[in-house]
Every structure is written in structure tokens, then in C-alpha cells.
Amino acid sequence: MARTLLLITILFLALTQQTLTPPGQSAAQQAPTASAPAAAPSNAPATGGLADTEFPRLIERLSEPGGYFDSDNLISNEASYLHVLGKMRKMNVTGGAFIGVGPDQSFSYIAQIRPRIAFMIDIRRDNLLQHLFFKSLFALSRNRLEYLCLLFGKPVPENLRQWDGRTIQQVIEYIDKTPAKRELYDATRAAVQAKVKGFGLPLEAREIDTIRNIYAAFFAEGLDLRFTSHNRPPRAYYPTFRDLVLEKDLTGKQCNYLVTEADFQFLKSLEDRNLIVPVVGNLAGPHAVAAIGRLVAERGERVSAFYTSNVEFYLMREGGFDQFAKNVRGLPRDERSVIIRSYFNGAYGYSLPQALPGYFSTQLLQTMESFVKEFQNDGYQSYGDVVTKHSLDLR
Image (cartoon, rainbow, N blue to C red):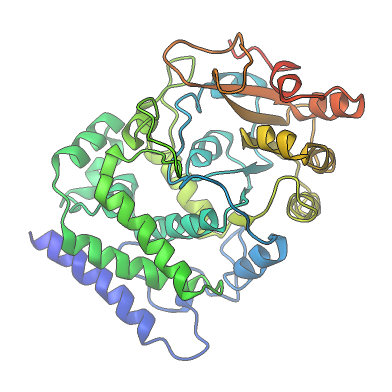
């Protein structure tokens, strides 16, 4: 109980610090909470990172106007999301820049690829808001167990650091057996709001409400949270948050970013240095993807992986696929650069040899170079062409 009350006090102090900040002083210039290491001053980036003042400006410079998609996207509905990682290890897909859509499934790709910078691009501005929520939790958390405790409103154990070497099964068991506490959730919500405001991105009051609603969903559902589509009934085959964390790649390895403390700390380091950049943009838009490509080139990097989920289906249907392909063509790449895509079995009328029993989704992998060459040869006339041509054998 003493540890729980201490955590509540610490988190409320973080909020108090925010409200007492003198005009013109950023959150990064305040004393840090006991839950997180001190942030770099806003006028000097942490080693290899972006300055706190540069982070919101970069988001606004790269972003396009937001659009609509018919799901909440709080978590992925792709149980197969890790199936490409064994092949990617064989190909030595590593470093460079990562580009990905969606919420936190991209974190697992990032943890394995170890890029030097990552961009979370999505047409939904709510996705940007969710990534600001995640960024605040990383800042408030010392390790992956504390991250999950804050995410679900659970008390942090006294021996927190002893959990660094525990298995993910043990971590999940702790979260499962430990009751959530409303007072912890309320304290964390206040601390999250203070952190989000401190990132410097102009947000409307309704957007702060959206972040509160995102957090409320994680608190209410816990590890049983599932992907939800608007105006469509829930699907029993959609994985829970628990399922996604415990999933394996095709070699039998658990690869979620929460499986090892080293992977979590790598993500935390990128977040703390402002190197996971959320961007609002259409993959077939005129600005965002091209602007990301120019920035990657300016940094002397190449795109190591571009995770598109099943966005290409909608782009093909709505007439934006050619512009998307042109955007991909403009990205700096090499022979190991890959596109990771998702296909939903039976939903689009194509039978894929990569589909596995028990999985509604199928993960596909293609080199970016083969994609660009096929596009230049007018090889993509349908979505079936996209998901069947040049997909790599994941075994």
C-alpha cells in the first residue's frame, strides 16, 4: 500500500509541476518525476535525438490533414503480425529508418530492426494522439512492468527492478492477477495529460478528451482489449492485447516489444530522444510520405522497412495506389529494404499460400526494389497482383 500511495503522490506531483510551470518553460525543463530519467533541456537534444522544441515542429512539417477510417485502431487485429520477423532476421533487415502505420504493433518491428529513427504515419489524427499517449507512458515508466501497470491502472510492485529479468509470461501473470485501482488510473491520467501538453504540439480540448478516451479503453478492458470496427460487430478471431504480446514468429520466437527488457528500453530510448515521430498522412497523399523520404535522405539513411498493413487494398479501391507507389519509389532504399503488409484471409477473394490455419490475417513481405520495378512495368492492375507478386517465402 505504501508503494501504491507513493506512486500516486509522484504522479500527482508531475501534474502539479506542469500547472506551476512559468510561462515559456517547457515540460522538459521541469524536474522529472521519480518514474523517469531526466529529460534533456528543450534547446539541446539528447545524444543522437531531436530537440524537444524540434519534435512538434517536425510533426507539423511532415503531416497532412487528417482523414477517416472506420475503426478505433487501439490495438492491431493482425495476429500474424510477427510472422515476417524470422525472414527479416535472415535478410539482416536492420538499422536505417522505419515507417509504419497503426498503433503499437510497429513497436515490435522497431524493437527487432533497431532503426535509428521511426515514423508512425496514419491517416487518422487519432493515431497521432494515441502515439503521444504511448510516448507519455514511456516517459513515466522505468521498465516494461511499470509501463503495463500504468497502462492498465495497476499498482507497481515494491521490487520493480527485480522484474527486469522476468519472463513475459510472469509479467502478464502479474498484470492478470493484480486488481486495477481507480485512484492509480486517475493519477496516471493526470500525469499523462501533463506530459502530452509538455510535448509542445498544439492540441484542441477535444483532442485531449480523445487521449483520455483512449486511456479509458485500456483501463476498462485491460489485457482483454480488442480491435473494434465502427458499425460492425466484434469479431471473435480478433486477438486480445494479451494474445498480441504472447504471439510468436514462425521460428517460435516471442518478438513483441514487451518480451524482453532490452527491447522495451530500446523503444524507451527512441521515445525519450524524440526519434519515434507520429505523422498524420495518407500513404497516397501529396506530401507526408515524400517529406519523410527527404528527411531520411538528409540524415544519410535508407528506409529499412515500411509497414503498410492492408492500406494498399483501400488505395487500390479508391484510386490512390499509383500515387502511393510513386511515393514508395521516392524513398531512399537498398536491396534489403522491405514492405510488410497484411492480408485478411477470405476478405478479398484471393487464396494465398502463405496463409496459416488458425490465423485470420496473413503477413506478407516484399523487397521495396521489386515493388518499384513491378510498378514501373505496369505490373499492378489489381489488389490480387499486389499480394501475390514477389512475396517472399517466409520459411
